[in-house]
Amino acid sequence: PRGEPLGVELVGVRKSFGGVHALQGVDLTIEPGTVHAIVGPNGSGKTTLLNVISRLLRQDGGRVLLGTEDVSRATAERLARHGVARVFQTPRLLGASSLRDNVLLGAYARERTGGTATVLRLPWARRERAELTEEADRLLADLGLAERADEEAAALPHGEQRLLEVARALMTRPRLLLMDEPAAGLTPRELESLGRLIRAIRDAGTTVVLVEHHIELVASVADVVTVLDRGRLVTSGSPQDALGDARVVEVYLGA
Ligand code: ADP
Image (cartoon, rainbow, N blue to C red; front, side):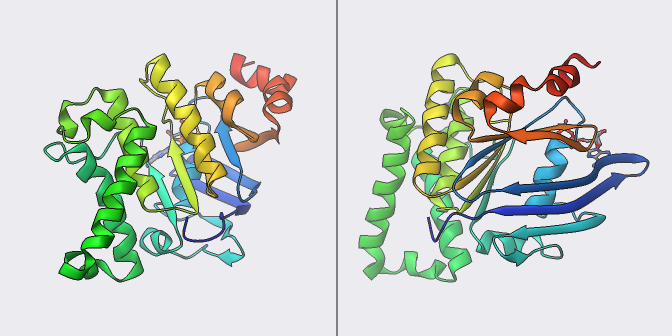
């Protein structure tokens, strides 16, 4: 990563869509260097929370801090410069490009935000290009995709396209990685790779915020689990405590 892992603090964050109160005053601290899972039933405000942190949405009230910096008014573009990366629910890949080139795109994003994009096109940057390619190939190998590095991304099964997106986000060397349901549609084997990958990302010095329905994955990778229900925080704690909480069982049973 390009620096220390980045923590997040939300203070009284509210967001409504017309009459729908998606977030109703959320106070939440995400400690740097942790995997912090956000769970809750459909419509509880999880994606809205990610959108507010990544500044795709502006909150109606309350404050958002990244590390010590108040980003309540910052735009999504500025956040990339702070080392915030996001993996979306639907992969956004270049289908006709190779797996390796898709991952390398992440490095270009990192150079662009660092202001030295052109460096990569100059002949004396050959060594740097080789290093980046090595880094991309290493990430692909971690995901079990090494032998397919030269294949077109479009040829990959859906689950592996999602893993490829994670690899690309990692090439930006983020200090904070936001993941929106990365486990959706993965096979058991891919799920295992994803779990290992998420832990490795954290151990390498990146804070991970994980919105996820797959409770076994959450239980196996999260340091902290926060449960939302109808735009409010129900509880936050270790996976054991949070997922075992009687109020949480109620939320999931719709009681
Ligand atoms: P979750 O991710 O937990 O399923 P969301 O954050 O997507 O929940 O949605 C929370 C609530 O806000 C839901 O009632 C949803 O319908 C509503 N909502 C989310 N985004 C929009 C939007 N762009 N326009 C209108 N309503 C929205």
